[in-house]
Amino acid sequence: MRAVVTGGAGFIGSHVVDALVARGDDVTVIDNLSTGRREFVNGAAQLELQDIREPYSLEADVVFHLAAQADVGTSMERPGFDAEVNVVGTVNTLEAARAAGAEIVFSSTGGAIYGDVERAAGEDDPRRPLSAYGIAKLAAEAYIEGWNRIFASRHSVLRFANVYGPRQSAALEGGVVSIFMERLQRGEETLVFGDGEQIRDYVYVGDVVRAVLASVGGGGVYNVGTGVETTVNELHRLCATVAGSEQRPRHVEPRAGDARRSVLDPSRAQRELGWRAETALGEGLRLTWDSIQD
Image: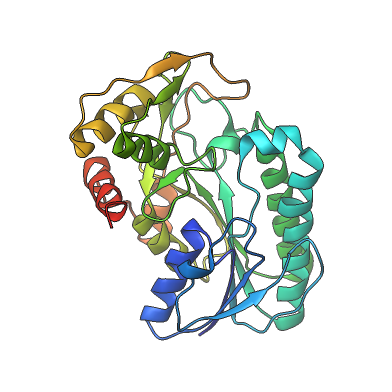
């Protein structure tokens, strides 16, 4: 298969590239390296420097569209920039894929789109984004749904829970696991916003990659999460245990836009794609900790 991975030099994208290369696909990475890292790009893949905010062309059977502005804080401070990357960038990718006759697998967000939930959110539940990032991703989903309807395409949307694992950047807000672990490794203070009882759904990047590959040809909208609720306080305790530390975090003022409860119902992906998360949180955290010891 000829595959293009936008954002293929980033956290999730580089793992997708590795999996595609491992199974023998012809892989091209499209990335502007603004947050991605050249050293993450598999040597068997071709790297093309491209900013998706500008129209571009590609040759592929499938486009895994993972390039994004993924920091919630940045989206609130610079909503125009966030929309350029996440909305205009997606439209440019849709048009490039349409010209090439390619299918798209789009990486969306569960937590930022559903907002606060009373139970594990299903794909048909109300979308109530609490940030510009969630609004932009929801708008991008609307374009994908529209293109599927207008042009009879079968692009898929994957709504990720809180993804963690090796190569995640501690510089980005979403990388709470890497933030905790890097600070624990250096013996620095760790911070928790609010009381730490916020509930999240943490899914390991290796499981996410399997979902991405399984969704090719699906043409639907799928949650990619575990359905398991974990508080931020519990996450910190597990990270400290893996790091062999007894350090406790310092609680600071809560952040505007943070959902109190964000967890996804992955049953549709299990039913239609045969996918389920297989990596328990403790095991995934151990793998992540081991990766930063190198």
